[in-house]
Length: 177
Image (cartoon, rainbow, N blue to C red; front, side, top):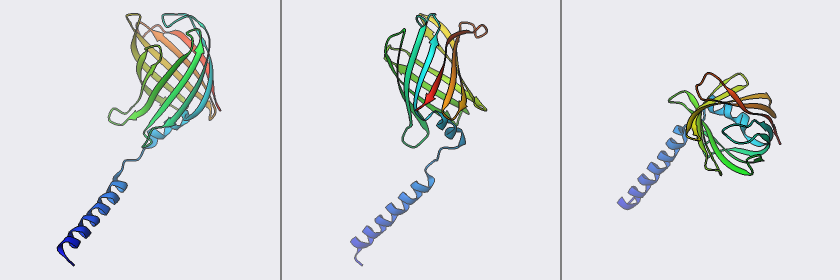
């Protein structure tokens, strides 16, 4: 075997070993990440929005499509909604932060709003809490989702200026298509 062939064979073996090692060492989503699968799929929602600093009250409808991002660690949700605020589009990412041992949510919509929240789950109830500015004021938010079945969920969005007195901003229900 010539030196050139030997180097080629050695390089090929190194590449194959590296690919096999990368495949076996690739991280896999753990049980915390897999819990987010409850939100995967296409959903339709309806809610009753209360008047407040977030806008006028009224009925609201939504269509959500949530699917796994490449690698299976984050859930990406694309939504359209209509109601008292007009038509909106939004995108959000939900994932598990293993370092901080907390779920994270990051989202934005076509009205210019951006927000983030930390989440916890206890049984079938998910609670997301965050702080964002609305009208120049720092507002705390709490979004509670109860999975009433694999295809239905109820939700309640609450807001507070002091973190003690909470006002319901919206309540509703979503059904998986």
